[in-house]
Image (cartoon, rainbow, N blue to C red; front, side, top):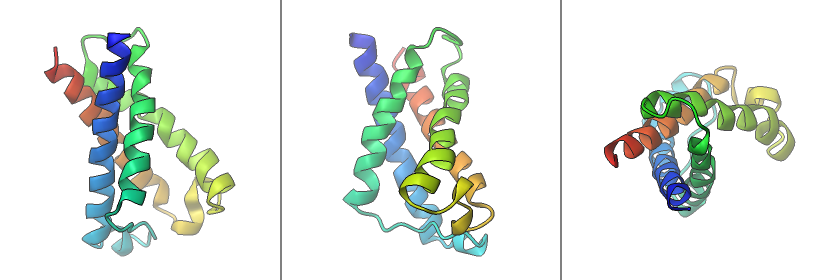
Length: 130
């Protein structure tokens, strides 16, 4: 049980980092320059779901592989929220097309990057706690 709480907390911290990076990249106009319509305002509507879902995704760290390479494991695990975002959330919930194509052709690249931020921070948090 203790490990699950630690994994959730690390994932939640990763989610917070992802929300802040997503906002910063949008605020700096990087997404706009790439032709992608992802520039959320810094608000609880951005941060709260990222923290909660980041914590839930953090539970994937319970999977028994790469136990000594937590940052690499986090980067690898970031594939799962990426796939859900690109193939379920964008087309079915947000009606932005498969891979979020309606937001711009490079949307999937940004989604991969933002989720890698989650994996890196979650893995780094777990590594620092050991």
